Length: 207
Image (cartoon, rainbow, N blue to C red; front, side):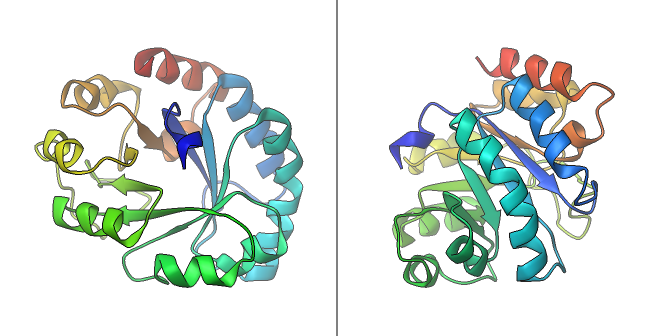
């Protein structure tokens, strides 16, 4: 969707790092810092649990005009008025997600190679996640793909590409220099001493 074109910093509120009750306060800090997109992720959480947290967060994202994405579960998007769903390689297809929700949705897809990225665009993804670039505690089983493919994926894929995986303030400039202009951050943001300042620093670097 065109709404994603100008967006650079994509935050993920991962419920393995923060409690359900902490999520609204964390989101406020992320928004105050200047994030452009936010996703709610809760692996091994039920649809009911995720929907309950999403309902707590939606008012803030709507007020800030920030797309709110749910990880994996189209059923949550069917209950709560979020703007999108993000799927992995082993999750429902983009067509299945769209057919499950009776309104226009942003649908993103995780990709781990240039070939998967091209396939996701052909499948109809509105944007892709591309990585993991570095080792990441969020997904320790995923082998990092490094920085070498960033320019090539931008050459072959025209939808927005958000690089992901172990990105933090210390390595962000390397990622930008390798050709990225949009990134996802998870643990770096959620564990920051000052989330607001950390987000502002990242958005300044991406500007």
